[in-house]
Length: 317
Image 1 (cartoon, rainbow, N blue to C red):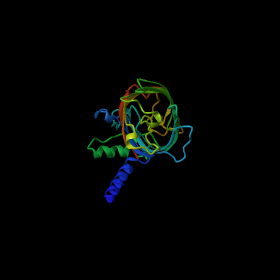
Image 2 (image 1 turned 30 degrees about the vertical axis):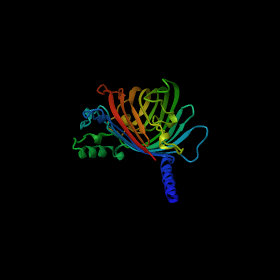
Image 3 (image 1 turned 180 degrees about the horizontal axis):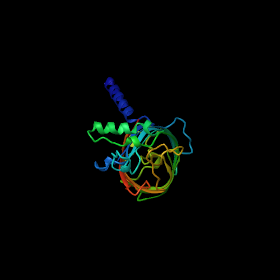
Image 4 (image 1 turned 60 degrees about the horizontal axis):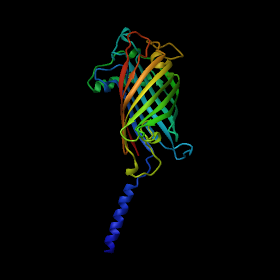
């Protein structure tokens, strides 16, 4: 009988160890953008983007804010004229461009649910990014048509940029199921120089998680050892309208240091955009799907507005 009770106690100890989770301080995932996520008939302008990311909570945390997250990105973006394949210069209402980059960010989450993101990026815009080769390789793999016209793409330039984003919570209603956050964003460098203002609105099925524990700005890692039952899942819709004032875009205008690119255009200084979508988080898996509506970016009468989709997937551990 004594051995029986010892066995029961050992079994309960194993169960308790399984229930007491270790801190999930790291996250890996992928951000993807593609106009084909909206329609298989779309294949132009900002046509594809893939970013792999890794985030972690550093061991030393400042007590002045609940959470600090370090983030590293590695990705590529590809841009083409509206028709996708445009072998003649006269057919190109936007330059072909590839942008390969690495980024590093520090994300600060404050007790009042403000958020600050600051970082730098280093990469290359031009043939050395491999954008054209990658796009045609993917098209060939999927049995799609060949993209012609990449020989006229924006020529090589060093991509060095600084990035800043600040968000401040304005209000919440309906038992915190609905909230509103003001946004300000600034980018400075040799790829893009612009400033943006707008807001993001959450509509949650349940009382929304605090910003520092939410997928809204990618803050799902946690230095606390929580049980599975203590990790609150979330499911919410969001709407994000923005106004952008643009001074420079290398993927459209080419390098600011030379005029070697065969096809360039001016940019529309004022751009309106709207992103709307859904974010779902269950235990350690995080999913996001959204649609972005962009105004006209290029000073060209042939250019149209663009719509593309985004799918983000990540895992915390």
